[in-house]
Length: 355
Ligand SMILES: [Mn+2]
Image 1 (tube, protein in one colour):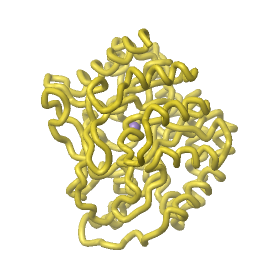
Image 2: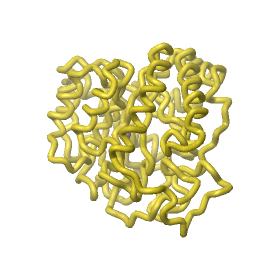
Image 3: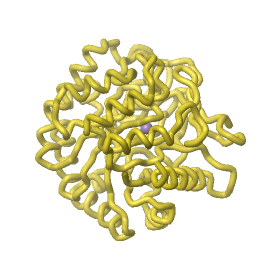
C-alpha cells in the first residue's frame, strides 16, 4: 500500500507537497473543485451557499493545466495519483438530466482525456444531487478537537441554481424560498442517470487509461433534501460494480462513509468483500463514531472502527493502491489542518509497517 495526501485546490503548492513528503506520503490526490480555503470545508446546515460557487475556469482542467499540475507534484518527488471530483459547473445537467447534458458529456470526456494524457491514473467522483451537505463542526473528537459531523438537521429543499452543494448558476441562484425547484424523482431514475453516464463516459476512460472511482454518498442517507442517493448502503456499491464489469469502473473506497451507514452491515466484512474485487482505486482512510443520522468524525485511532484491523484486511487481500487520510479533526495549534493530517499519516505509516 502507498500513503497519500489529499490537497484542496488552494493548497496545491510546493510547501504542501513538501509537507506531504515529510509526513511519509508518496502520492497526492488533488481536489481542485471548490474554494476550500485552508482546507476547512464550509458547512451548510443554514442552507445558504453550500461549498460556494462552482468555478468553470478551464485552465487547470485543460491538457496543459493537468500536465503542469502533475509536473509540479513530480518535481516535489511525489506522484499525482488522482483528481477528485468533477466541477459541478461542468456536469450539472448530467446529474439533473437537463438540456445541456449531451454537451457536458462531451466536455467531461475531454477532461478525462486530459487527465489521462497527464499520466494521472484515477478520477474520483461522487454521483450526487444534494452532495456532501448538512454537516456541522463541533468539538466532538478527542480532547475537544473540532471535527465535522452530521446531527440530523432540518433539510431545506435545494435552491435553484445549486447542485452537489455548490452554486453553478449565480444569476438564478435563490438561497431561500424556492421549494420544489428540483422535481421529485425516484431512486430508479437516479440509477438510470448513473448508468447512462457510465455508458457514455466509460469507453473514453478506458481509452485514456483513467479509472473512474465512485465515492459513496456522504452522509449516507436514502434521501437528502428531497433527492435520492445512489450508494447509501454498503451492498449498493456492488450494484455500481455490476453496472459495468470493467476495471475502469471502480471505487473511491471511503471507509468513513461506509462506517456511517445505518444498514446493519459489518464494516470489516464490507472491507473484506470489496478489497477482494480488485476494483478499489484508492482508499479514504478515516474513522467515525455513530451512524446516520448522528455521527462525528474522529481521530484515526479513536472511533467505532479498529482501523488497524481495516489496514490488515486490505493488506491480506492484496490491496496495493493509495490510502489517504480523507478528513481529520483539527488540532489545537497554529496549524490545525496540518497537525491533524500529520498525526493521521504518522499513525498510518506506523500501522502499515506493523500489520
Ligand atoms: Mn470520503
